Length: 218
Length: 218
Image 1 (tube, chains in turn orange, red):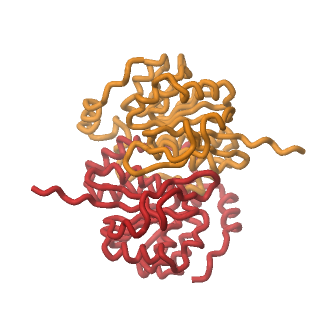
Image 2 (spheres, chains in turn red, orange):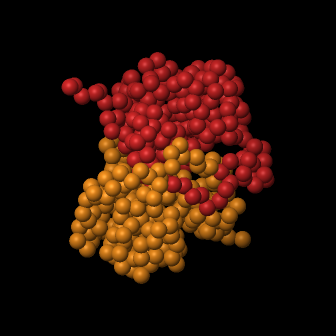
Image 3 (cartoon, helix red, strand yellow):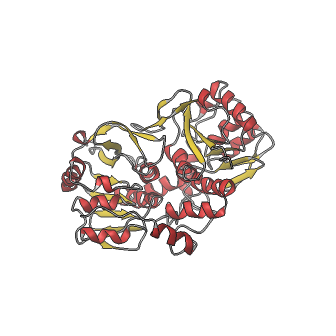
């Protein structure tokens, strides 16, 4: 029997991405047998994140990864530079035409929105930017991982791990996803309970809301 | 008043590290005001992880980061190559002489053990390797994050996020740690409950135990 073709999972990098947005789901998805997870960027090579002194290497340029089964877009502290028309949004639209799953973590959903891919879809984002999804015709939804058709979006940063594991289950079955969870010893016990605006001290939430920079006009 | 000196947090990279072991705590620690998190390796430049096609860039070589306040050693699928005497273990011993915290994620604790830093200490590791800590005179301890003096060790892979947040609280106070948790939206909701050998299907755990490769002699 011929071997099933390897499914490619493309994680998009761009200058200013948040490291854990990409690496959390990477660690879940790259362990799925029969798949290959590729970090892709406008050009191959090191891509700086949204902090100082950190770079992750993109193995492939956009033109080298044309029809991934899964597309994943991480967020970043300031994605306004990624919301303008250009090769990244064009690539996303083209990749989405053939993908099984088009997904995002954190403010990556704004980038999917700017590509025109979330119109009429339920979706989520980082809590500070969730309502901004309506700028792109999406329906902001307060869940950690939101699935609408083949579109899956995760809340802020660390939610990409939960999304990665959810996706692993859908791609490869519950047993494989459970094995990945076991191997990653993903049995979280945060030392604080401040991981959402509903749970965190109100003053912290208010300060972040007050300091939120404006997004560029759509 | 003179500005307090920047505290350096050094995350060690080596060929075969697990990406999330390094990037989970990185994302928590690099957001602490007044600190600088540096990825360090034997030589600066891209360092491949324990999967294919992924590399994280080490900004500094070992000789450039001599007295970090915090040392963090990630694990990897097969760390046997890191347990032998050499420049990495020498650097760890020297860095530990001046550190405020010496820490590890996953099988990184075996590397700390090989450097002679965990003798008589309570410590943890990835569940599959926890008992091997006794090879180095450490006391294997079944907790997600174990603190003994200035030594803090985390369980497998994703436990580094819980450790990073714990450490953030100790370095910068509860309020800062809660803010980091809020910004990272770290309110985990795994879609499965198989994140420890006690909770995962017994067959999976047994298979991993049976396939465990031997560690080199101490």
